[in-house]
Image: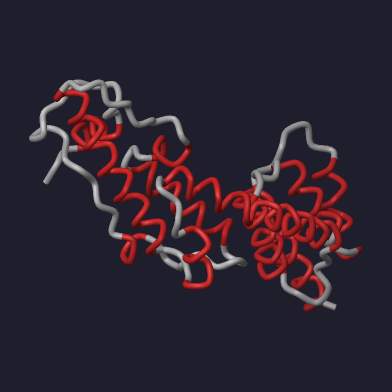
Length: 225
């Protein structure tokens, strides 16, 4: 089994001296490491999973274009570096193709490098992701607790926020708190005011505990009357 330092060296084939023994290629086990295949509707989640996998193996520079293939100058050392770079890139390209649904695979099958594939997928689906972000943000702005329990309500809010984070960027604690408080309804007016008056931000977990506690308090009052 290769060490993590060996794997890190593998990526820098265009800059680091190496021997074949110390520069093992990395094959990605996509079926075991990517939960769902890429479809037009799952691009943000798929990209997040694939990026985490590439970062873990220190291979992200291949798909983002930072690790480039050397041009051959006729020397055996450069030719060897180029050969290994191409082989590693083809392994990544194969993993990308293997993790896409048949409806998408044919759209990117002609790409020669993993970077070209990655760029093509971004061009195809990034605009859809932006549209989805706007839809989710509107849902988050308008969400109301209604008859849901506090845990169910907070779960629904957090699910929307998490999906926005995957597609675009994480929502700040203060903004998430505001979305949650705006949808609570009049029963929680007593606790909303002091929360809004706080000088420091509340983490989601802290807000969750406060609201669950207040819900329990309201139930006890109702039971006592």
